Structure formats: C-alpha cells, structure tokens
Picture 1: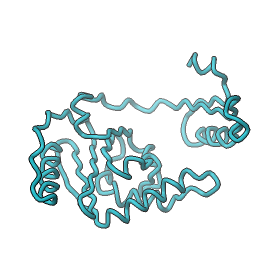
Picture 2 (picture 1 turned 120 degrees about the horizontal axis):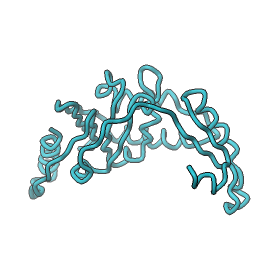
Picture 3 (picture 1 turned 30 degrees about the horizontal axis):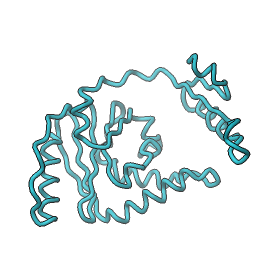
Picture 4 (picture 1 turned 135 degrees about the vertical axis):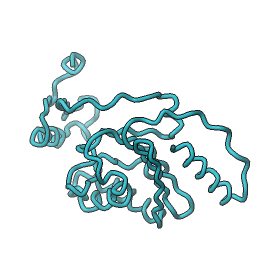
Length: 212
C-alpha cells in the first residue's frame, strides 16, 4: 500500500542527502475508499503515488520546478476576477497531475495529499478530458500528510448527490469602502443554478444563515 511507497520515498531522499538516519516506524494507515493521490518532489521530479482498491502505482513527472511555476501562475490567474478563467491551463494541469490516475474514475472519492506549491492549488477547478471540473466528477478530500489518515480513521463512502446550497454575501458593513460591495458574488452564485440543482441565497442576513 502507500505505506510502502512512502518508505521507498524516504529511502530515496536519504540516499539523495547522503544517508540520513532512518525515519521512525509509521503507524498503520486506514486508506480511504476510492482513489488516493500523493505528490512529493524529489529533486526536479514530481513523484505521484496513487492507490486505488489496493493497487499501488508510482508515476514520475519531470521538470518539477517548472511545474511549480505553472501552478503558481494558474492560481494567481484563477483568482483574478478581472481576467478570464485560464481554462486551457486548468485542462493542461489536470492532464499532467491527475489524468493517468483518474482516467476511468467517473465517481467516488479522491483523497489528495499534496506538498509545497501543490498544497495551494485549487484541484477542484482542474478540468478533465470530458470538459468537466474535477469537483463535478469526484468527491474531493485533502490532507496535508498521509499519516493524518491514521488519525482520521476509515471514511464513509460519499453519499449520492442531492443538491447544493450556495450562500453569497455582496455587502459587508464593516469592511470599509474598498470592500463594501461584491456584486460579482451574486452573479457567480446564481450561475450555479444553471449547472446543478441548487438553492441560492443572496444576502440572506446573519439570522437567516444561523437558521440553516
């Protein structure tokens, strides 16, 4: 399982560092159902460890430094409301980072274990070969370290999709004039209704939110 992959990864890092002391024994992991993808940089390679239904795979992606720069640019462009969403790069990053692992995964849970720059990547916004967002195809979970799964324990299988509740606030009384209004929040939230069954609340007020 992935414990063996992590042990091999630790050994490779020790070799690269000239033989550091071995790491302490790891606790037994409770791997979640579905697909697990762990990313780790080793030199200028990105190692992608994956586990699916007990089957382990390792894939090596070259030019990790260049890939991290692409991830950083994508994150900045995706957060810039004055620019069009970088759809082509969302598709390209999915192809590099996850396509071999998720090619035939049409539903279920994907647990992501990124490190470094990838920990800040909005994986949900990546686009698969079917032009759907990754979050539309799979239920996404993210943990900062694989060992945390030992504390989390077994995860329940994702429930069937029933709908979406979207709440948007466009006015902030205490935010000052620079952030007093966010009109785009209403447009973006209502756009969800065209993609999924959704209940949309725009500026419902604090009391209404507490009653949800």
